Length: 338
Picture (cartoon, rainbow, N blue to C red):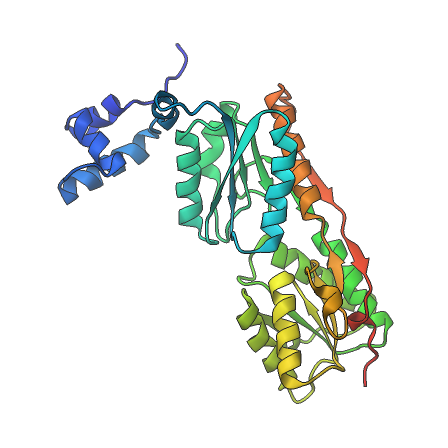
């Protein structure tokens, strides 16, 4: 049996019963095509696994740099910007160009970006998975030898290299710090959805710390907020409880900002706060914010090192690297309960 070949535009055209020019029009959105024909072409592309060779077209206009594609959930989140910086610093020395795209935390857009990067024949693929993603569609690329590394969150449905932070351990340390300062009613404001890997791990660390201190778990103290304003509203709901928390653990940087904003709006400086992930102006807050700090640049650099090893011929089994976190005490997490 001969080696498998990648399907071509001609194969797609033959499958649909149209010309290669029609297929090209659909894929490049270049010229009128009937809606029904367009749908049939796209269905055939999916069925055959066809990926247009955009790199060949780019070479004709002078693009020569080998590239690595990186998909992140949010461009505006400083954490992912620093991760990308860590990746770029490591790969630039090898003459590789980093191309970054945002999935907007949407599985469909993530898959579309991945398809675009693969069509450009990137040398390697790096992905911070969106919520509800499924990566089984990358199995053939992985088996064909394309280096694929997942950052911050592991792949779903695919065994692949990944680099994550010590989410559970860091959260456990942050909540235990609040317990050590006398708090027994500790709220949790985390990401949404609850199934998101980082949210799930950090919430489990919160539960671990409560269990370790012999404190009961109260579901009324758990709220979700994906962005800053949603986290602020979640914090206000906690403060309005008949028996409100005396401390809050924020599950990510946007949640931390929301918690701080809500407490400022309510004039509640006595509520202790520990946030997961550091903030640029954490020391300027009143009181300064105690955090469980990740190392996003370290996450990016570790992922880049994995990619470079794979490009150099490493064909060992997929591995996971965990980057440690550290507790930085500044004042907000050391406030005693009333």
